[in-house]
Every structure is written in C-alpha cells, then in structure tokens.
Amino acid sequence: MENDQWPTIAERAEEILGNSTPAPGQDLWRKVDEFIVETLAPKGDVGLEAALVESYELGVTPIQGQFLHLLARLRQPARILEIGTLAGYSTIWLARALREGGKLISLEHNPRFAEIARQNAATAGHGESVEIRVGPALDELPGMVSNGEEPFDVIFIDADKPNNPHYLEWALRLSRPGTLIIGDNVVRGGEVIDPASDNPKVRGVRAYIELLADDPRIDVATVLQTVGSHGHDGFAIAVVR
Image 1 (cartoon, one colour):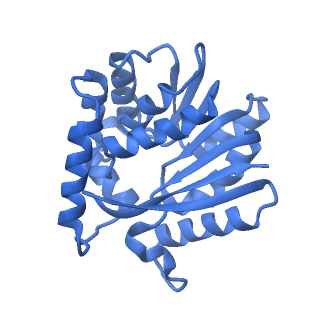
Image 2 (spheres, rainbow, N blue to C red):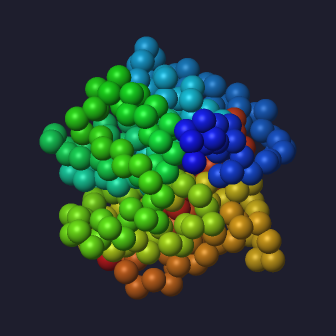
C-alpha cells in the first residue's frame, strides 16, 4: 500500500473509537477538563503540543497523558512497551517516566504516523530513548518474544480494540513479576456492559477484561472509568503476578 493510501488520523480515530454521541453531562465534563488543563497541564511544551494537536481526534487529552505518566512513574520503569503510537502524545508522556538511560519501544502499523511520532518525540527531547517500530503489532510481538526481547516494566495497549485479547497475551509474555499493563478505551461510552453487542471493538474489550479476571498470570486488575471533553471511557490497569 502506498503511503498516501494510509488512513488519516481522523480516519484512524473512527476506526479505533467508532462514532459516539454526546453523553448527558458532557458539557460539564468538558468544563471540568478545561479547568484541570488550565490549572495543571504544562504550557509551552512544543513537543507535547505538536503531538496533542495531531492526536486530538482520538480523545487523547493532557489530563490522560499526565495520568499515564504518573502511573508509569510509580513503577520507575527502565523499559516501556507501547502498542499503538499514533502521533506520539502518550509516547512522550510515558518516556518522561523512564529511569535515566531507559528505553521505550512503540509499535505502529502506519509509517506516516510513525514518522510524525518520531519527529514529535525528538522535539520533546526523547529522540534517544524512544524507538518506534513500524509494522502490524501482531507481526512484531511474536518476533520480540522469539528474539529474547528483555521484559518490560510498563506496557500500554492502545491500538485496534478487536485484537486486545491477542495484545494482552503477548504483553504477558513480555512481562516480569510486577509489570504494569494499561489498556486504554475499554469502557466505550458504557457499551462494554452489553454481552450481546455485535460491535467488534466492544467484543474485544469485553474479552480483554474477562482475561484480566481469569488469567493466573495477573495478580490484580481493575478498570477506572473516565469522563471528560471526549466522553465516557476508561483504563484497564493490571499488575503481573
């Protein structure tokens, strides 16, 4: 496929999140988001701002980026794996949680997005610590395991939702005891509660959450619902046994 045939970021947003309608209370959520961003979000950070503009359609916000950073920073990671890069906004926040000399590997299937993310990471001062690998994650991950890739301290899963159960399996193979695994967009405006849903994204995140409950390699897991200017969603957060 030629580069100019790859989906735009807006098209990727629809692919990952699907269409949604405003939820009751969303205007209030948006105003609260605006207050928190105005009060706590960093200002004048060129690398972050460029990545945010290019990621906005996917519902990435400064609040969520900082939340990911705080979670990862508590783990004090030397190695982070990200599945799904887009423009690199979450990549930058996660890279800022690395120990000195640490490494973040991010997998992105779209060469155009990967190049944008590399530029944004470099602008934000993380060109040396961030490596973006291009190709379908389900092609890349088995090779990482077979090549003896060192385990990761934090793994962030934010790619196509129907494949979430497969991403979780490979994430567990690339983990060590205490690894933090974070999955994004798992509530989907509340659709996750529908066991009869024929939406492949909903089915994917339901299976993902059920695996977190059933897999003996998971020590503890929870889902945190989020609301804000981009609606109702949530993170699944788990620690490997």
